[in-house]
Image 1 (cartoon, rainbow, N blue to C red):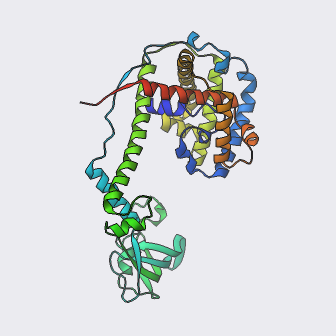
Image 2 (image 1 turned 180 degrees about the vertical axis):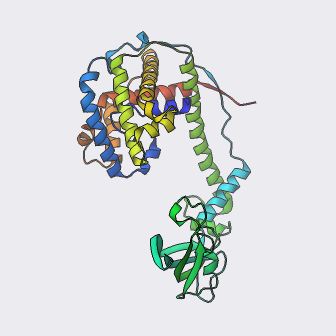
Image 3 (image 1 turned 120 degrees about the vertical axis):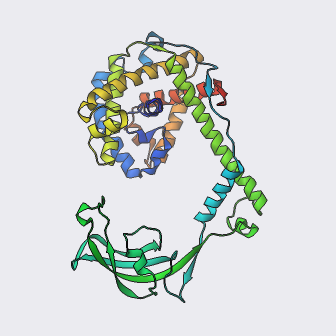
Length: 385
């Protein structure tokens, strides 16, 4: 729950979806989705502006009126130092080799187990084609279990250009389409091509084929991969250290109720963000909130309000630390980050992007990032026993 709390805390700051700040995993969404969900969230924010105008932002408040800080520098957290073992290094190198498998066409024999075949097929049940049972140009590794029982075995022995009826049975139960459970289908299959994929050996020639700067042999390649993996683990280590410090600092604070206007702003934004994600996953908001935070789907409004109250308190904690340590976000830093965000998400101008973003809330978000980094830098990591 604490990890989830931190994740939402650091993305609820802007009056748009969580896509626009923080978790870069959200970049997997395409630009159009980002724009659509941003504009939807902005409509909700505009409706709430009158409510949040006074006392809704930390610039209007003295944070320490609402939170009594405990120790926040030098807190001790349990965390092991990054380490790249030989086993992990070898496993990663093997993984890369597998993803660089060489495909070789086969023209002088029939399909065998392990081959990759490109096929067209039309599936019928009792002579009638069914939805989802046909495809063209589909790649299938024979023996992968990707298709239903009987299909892949039925392709063994076929030659390029050959067409054959293959009988296969749907499993029972069959979650993808319960109406097909246990039924026997006949697939008319045509083999377009056959190929085999071979994992390259770890040789100097293979390393050179990867075109990595400074890597001409296996020894240099292993050192290169080691450095890359260590850098990744170090970044993860620093992030985990900051998260653990944040959790410990929050646990030592004494909180008063946050201003109602601030809670309302948090609640509006959180509701908008989660509504966008619920829509993406094809579920209603109550169901999504229940899965995220517990409680029943019917009580989701109460659940979100409680989360918003907690988040407002934690924002005030972060601001109180920022005030004590002189951490702030300058106008130049704010503009630079907004410009970068606008570019990342495909907006033609930064002004277009800013029109959809609660800029003051975005400044608050950047402040939390500075405080989080400060807490991590000043924490003391102790390896687990």
